[in-house]
Amino acid sequence: MPTNTERIPTTHVGSLIRPPRLREFLSAIREHAAHDEAAFETCLRESVFEVVARQAQTGIDIVSDGEFGKPILWNAYINERLAGVEKDPSAVPAPFPPSNDARLFPEFWADYASSQGFDHNDAVGFVAGGPISYRGHAAITRDIANLTAALGEVDVSDGFLTAVAPASVSGIRWEDAYSSEEDFLYAVADALHEEYRLIIESGLMLQVDDAFVPWMYDLMVPPGTLEDYRRWASSRVEMVNHALRGLPPERIRYHICWGSFNAPHVGDVPAADIIDIVLAVNAGWYAIEMANPRHEHEWRVWEDTKLPEGKVLIPGVISHATNVVEHPQLVAERLERLGRLVGRENVAGGTDCGFAQGPFIQRVHPTIQWAKLEALAEGAAIASGRLWGEPALR
Image (cartoon, rainbow, N blue to C red; front, side):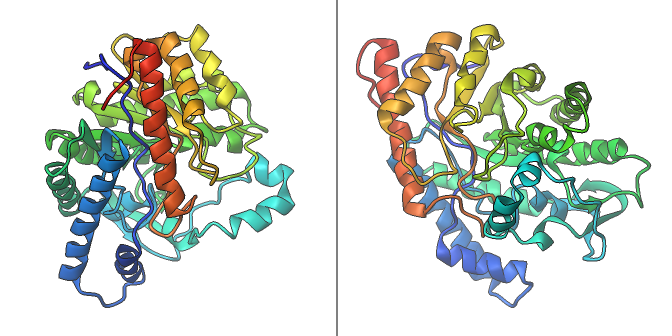
């Protein structure tokens, strides 16, 4: 496992706000409207080149394609890459129970949930009519080619593509084809293994996004117990590891957050109650939300938790959920205290979550997104100077 021997590198969670021209094409695709496919592919490629160049200029070391190739949500995109799954608006899965935020703050939630740009139709209305396998080869090959070509034009450390974890796949009615949810999700894990493998074999890093693992606590407890939740989460981590089988951990990032929404978060599972389960994932890098004011105090979990040998922690030191731009000195403090706990060579600066959970959802203004990433780069340089005892230069 390579470690950071000179300074703290910077990265983010992957999803960036789509530019207006690309969003026009993605809107047409979403609505099944007529569009020029060749012009879309050209726009997508140019947009990826531009966003990679902007990340490099901003000081980000490990960059992504912004998830620009995903036409719908961060997790629902895979539904269209699974053979055996088809879109069927009448196939509505059982709804999730209300979260604690929705239960305790119903007036807030009624106003907030309708203002975030989510289209319910993006997330539901899929049905598994037969055995599931992977059919997304053309889409992932295109995304790999676009990012790889863009990386050839910039001076950065590495590039990564994101993919959903089995437990975070949702909106698919599976009962017609599988006898249990576990059987269904293991079939999904087998299909995802193909996407994971293609990303890593291309030379890029893989980031596995698993927001549902921490978020499900908020839906289960109460009436369930912490023990009920931990059993559920542990079983889902086993599914992730099944999907990751045979792949090199040093090229794998595992990301969790407590939901991208700017809400009270009073029902979130404490980090201390889940960190051992997270570290059981066979990944080399762990991207964990830590700038959220409901969770920032939990940096102290690393006083009692040992980061496994050779692993890298990517703490979120920039929030995606507020337009307030973090001061670089605050970013530096967050990184420095963690560097002193887990080892300066085992820390990379990151964001809590993506700045956009899909093409039509954005959590901050685009100009604020870049200001935040600049603050991340500046703060990492300050922390590196303190931890290595001299100014850190890119």
